[in-house]
Image: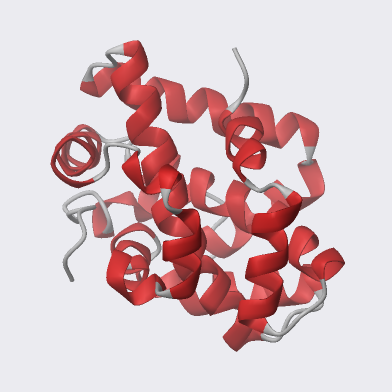
Length: 196
């Protein structure tokens, strides 16, 4: 089975990457670098949030209600009007107070400015949630299995891109004690759905 990052990459054909680049006013090489950082970041944040039962249950419910994967059939619509797909709301639930740090890290590693990094995240967040929803449907994942699936995905990204994941783990550790698990309480009760 392909990893989640590989599945998402399949949707970012040259045409889609070009559309994102045009939307953000950047070249495709920079777009690809930024996407290569942003996707693991979002997966790591989801894995972190779902590692506690309350967070995993909230994610499962949000997927069942709002993220069935249909967004993957309308990526052009998402790129042209990301506000209609509540990317900002998803990021608020997934990243919380670490969003600014996430944007800065993507900018640092890709060459984007932070504002463009934020716009890219608003496009990618519904894609990641839609992909996760599609995987959940195809594999009939329970809440526990969904959390386990995300943790496996995070581990795979860690192995394939350790430098990126080390930086991501650092920015997700909000109190900078080297352990993201103790920051989970702030996120576990968040709702991952479309609304603010």
